[in-house]
Length: 308
Ligand code: CP
Image (tube, rainbow, N blue to C red; front, side, top):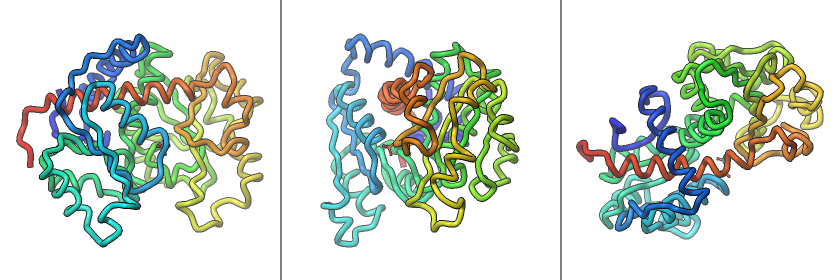
């Protein structure tokens, strides 16, 4: 049971709530793979409201809702009244008045999902807000790890890439630490805020140190759209000095999984032979994403507390 009507991040979720989401997502994934899904959200309505581009998150929220029998409406912000100057709160209240049950929102502003959640009765799920959190991405990463290793506690997860701009890194740090994993990060000094150590991250001094004994090796996309340049000399040099390479995998555990939230810059964060290789869990992450979003929708539909 979730204690809030919304899922805005993993920072304030209890470990027991994360564990329950993962257990429910494992059940959902079995049903998804067997194509035996119960239509438990028949009569409910999910609005997918994305102010930023997305392939995986947007599509998987839509499919998760449809697989569970909900009505799903995609709002195209480019053709909505947002273009006439309507505020997020007014957009939310308008859709809430149509008696929707869930919003899945992505927004470039950190805190936008929380603002929406305060102003609507429907449950709000954060599909990524600025450089803040991306809770369902971290949950699907954890589900992928849990399925592979049977546990999260005691695992070492190395996260390499654009940590500074990454809501995926922050949500994974909160979630993995709550469930007892070790999280080690590595990036150019310009792309890794030191304050992450306050939340329990270890900052490695080299790729070798980051990967040493790792069970999970996660590459993060270089988010060119969120930076003004100057954080590293060039993509080629980034790849050479900070990218994950085949020859570095000898430092990780032999059965380590390679992960990436996508979309991936092929040849920058990871070379194609690792993206498509035997240790890659990148496609599994995508399937886990549908299952996690199904579990979250289901659990929020069971929320019995006060709404707004
Ligand atoms: N991982 C992720 O958020 O991908 P999208 O931007 O395609 O949704």
